[in-house]
Structures are given as C-alpha cells and as structure tokens.
Image (cartoon, rainbow, N blue to C red; front, side, top):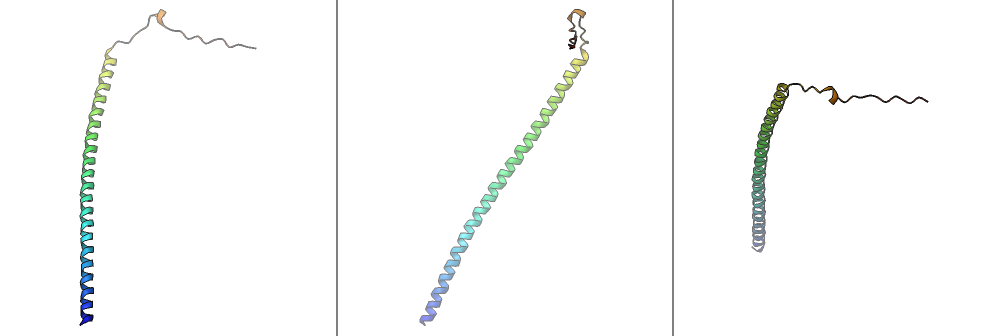
Length: 99
C-alpha cells in the first residue's frame, strides 16, 4: 500500500511538472505569436513606406521631366546670341620659347 502511495505521488508530481511545462510553452508560444504579429505590422508599415516613396519618386521624375522640357523649349525659342566682334575673346597661344 505504501509503495502504491509513493508511485501515486510520483505520478501526480510528474503530471504537475508536465502541466507547468505546457504552461511555459503556451506562454512562450503566445509571446512568439505576438512577436510575429508585431513583426508583420512592422513589415506592412515598411511596405507602405516603400510604396509611398516610390510614388513620390515617380512624381519627382515627372516634375524633372517637365522642367527639362520647359528649359529645352525656352532654349529652342530664344534667338541665338551673337556677339559683337569687340566682345569676342580671342585666344592667341603664346609663342614657344626656343633655346
């Protein structure tokens, strides 16, 4: 009878230990699940940021293209500037010294 009680106590103790281990694992799993949700939220936010930046870059490229076109049109519409002979800078190379 005493041996039966000892085995019963050992079995109950083992069951309690198993229950505590399962609770620890449940807590750890909940923590990991929450961390996974947090990571997913961060990833979603980063994706949204990247998408917004891509849109901004696209708009900036459009603006740059428009400005380049306007500048080209302005350059094309202005008459060529001709300098008066007295305003021209003439380049005359120096005579090389001979020994």
